Amino acid sequence: MIAGSLSAPSPPYAATVLASPTGRVRAALAGSLLVTVLWGAGALSHAFVAGGGEAVPADLGAAPGREPVRFRWFDAAVLGVVEGVTEFLPISSTGHLLVTQRMLGITGGETDPAAKAAADAYAIVIQGGAVLAVLILYWRRVWSVVLGFAGRDEEGRRLGIALGAAFLPAALIGLAFEGIIKDKLFGPWPVVAAWAVGGTALLALSSRGWLEREHTAPGLRSITVRQALLIGVAQCLAMWPGTSRSLVTIVAAILVGLSLSAAVEFSFLLGVLTLGAATAYDATKHGADIVSVFGGVADPLIGFVAALVAAVVAVRWMVGYLQRHSLAVFGWYRLAAAAVVAGLLLVGII
Image (cartoon, rainbow, N blue to C red; front, top):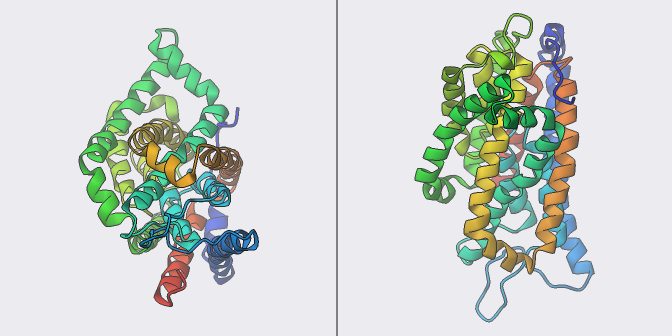
């Protein structure tokens, strides 16, 4: 099973590599590379379309006398890969998607509210591919929960109750403040701020050893409703784009007493509920807008499949990585991404 126990992260790695100048440079270069690749993907997308003879302006807004610009299959594929790679890593998928949309020139803007609504909604709906990846990789655990509610698996029943308790705070707050969050926070500068703050916090916690409790902390089967509720409250912080649902739930789970392996698995499973609900809600509310700007359902499905495949690879990689290393590298990555994107924004490249 993919969700096998993770061994303790190696303290020497965090202490001698990530804390070293070379380690910091490598993490910064990794962050810079990803952001540069995404920016290059935007330029390639426009060049690709132009080469095919289709005139597509950078802004989705429809000028007077001109048809609104539609998303393309290439945009869907790029967004799908970005979603799948970043959803379960503690680096924020929503933040990466919003920045990638800006690089691809598909933000919509004030001139075309329908296109902006579709772009924002697609950044949520595409999470369905990542949800399916977890269902595939962790199907035994999910089936255990199903059997638990059928009265045939007590451990699965307890886990299902804990997942429900952790899901509740985000469900209530998300429904209450959905409009405010999308109107005020779905932009590049809130993402940059969240990347920087989250990266700093993750490095601070890692440097003090607070996130390395693998041998002494209990596993997933011991989680209580109280612990789950605290994790759920922490998950609400991830409604600020760039924060990362994965980051806050993993850190919160460790801080309330779970081992790293249990925290990672609980975060993945909680994502199935949280992301699944958000996907269903936005697909129902904005599905027509998404189909309209894509010109059908084929292109959005390309993004969905790309997210599924990329998420399977990313989850497998993350589980294997954390068997040998700490979470600190993700803190350095977040700081590098914040610095690069802030620079690109300040010089007007994106």
